Length: 460
Image 1: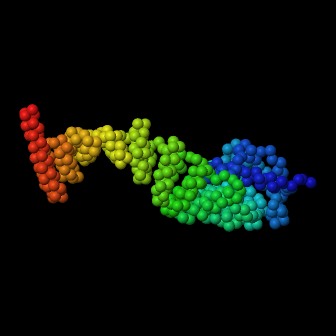
Image 2: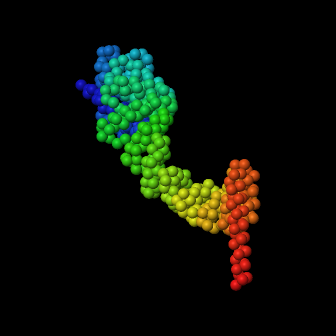
């Protein structure tokens, strides 16, 4: 008596072959099978059932066995496949197809035949033909639970590779409805399929379910999954949820990109104090290494009433060659020092900014700083440069500032001239009149005092 075929072993071999193919070409999806091509179909002890040369009607044989004729040709197909003789393998498989067309195959033989068609087409990256082979498998009678799950899974995967995400999602959802155990990978692929279709709201529940299953299995969730979920929440403008995902990602993976993104997300959810704090922490960790990042940190410190810290960040960034020393950044550095009441330190960056500027406003501001420092000669020089460059927001205000500096220098006639210039702008008319009256009195008092000093000197 001849031994029967070891069907379970053959099925494992076939399934492993298909899994290997899918794991190789579906590069955007998680790899599920870790086999090599040399392991496929090797060292098998599969034997054929007794056929005696004449085939019995299919119904008379078990639907779970392969006849010797089919078994022999399947072995030939495997050998030719391993030698990469795909056309020859398909030709041998065609002999089995002839029996299929004559309705001479049982359920198992039909299933195996279509599996090998799918296998060979996938190897040659003929995915539409492979898909059709799986569809034929799905239409067979008397499929087992495992066979239906397997076929639905591969159909979804192949449609995904073809970037037909709608069909892929449909088959994966059918798989979920039919499968006994939840498959976290399938949930992930449905979620990414919806993401590719830009149906972000539909994607979120499937990615969450993928994470839920992994947590239940005490398995790690990939960084890519966290990034995808965060992107989905951003796309649906659920910034609070995106922030929570990002927080978890920071704790789990401690990657620079997440740390740098954290302050931006905090700003999006209007947690400005935490945003400033996070910027400081991120900088302390050494993760801020670009112009925009350091300037944002400085701005956060400035907005949270820490102007000196703002200035120090700006100065450090410029010293390290990270922050560009352009007009805007130099003016911002000067402003930080001014607000921190470090006027002397505010001068040098503002002088450089004023030289770069196309208008006189920076020189006007510089003149006011010099006035605050009591250096009225330099303040007058700065105001004069401001007027020379022109294009001022308020020329009348610059003239009034000049008036004060001239007063401090006892240059009353120049002060009066500046006040009269300011008076030409009706917005400063009253203030200018006050200055004119004050300067006139001070000039008279000063001249009287000077005359008395000269007379006293002559007398002595």
